[in-house]
Length: 306
Image (cartoon, rainbow, N blue to C red; front, side, top):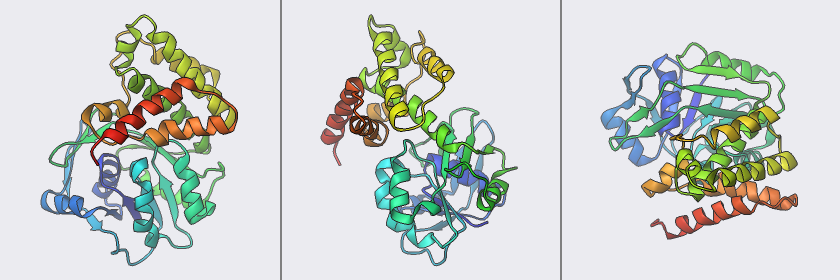
């Protein structure tokens, strides 16, 4: 199976790099600046699970000459639109796109552009970042990726992708309920992002204030109301666990969006919060705290130098 990884940032670079390390047929579609960096220094992973430096196969926009069997799409949500034309030549009649993005808006956009048959589901749990030298820094031992057909049905292409992913060194799992898992991740991530970005602190810092835990629980309830109305609601057990985790005293937990905000980087405000608020509004579900968090981030994005 020939795999095209769109993006060689911290997520695509980590999973694609581990696949390449294991001898899989992996090519990275990258921007010119990243291509120059990778050609000069190699694809470098620094991880508690083992360091590696690879010489990856690279292509840039306009250089794709033939279709790939699968596309692992790992760009940030705000970079999705710009990537569509770049990887479109990699699609053949049987190519499957496995997006590893946050939220669900990307699924709608990919289906609109390439057709529902071309799009599967995916998510990952892996805390990584790029350092100034372009190295992929793996921050803990968690390295999980899940994938599956969005309708939950088994398929030969997912079985083939699963065979590609197994035995590589990270935890790979073929899911028969990937849509529910994606909605579940969005539920938690949107709650965490809204809490930590709106109140500008970690979970523990928010919980230490007089009204912080109360506001955090209200935010979780707003996200729950929307996901229940327009998507797939998490279980009561998952909701209770989320409320406990997101109000835990002393917790250093914060959304990666909050870290990006602190660093002056672009944020996925529209994909993680704005789209959720819009879906809720269309269904008649009010979410004033989520809307406030999104407005807060929209002001930041508008003021940020382009």
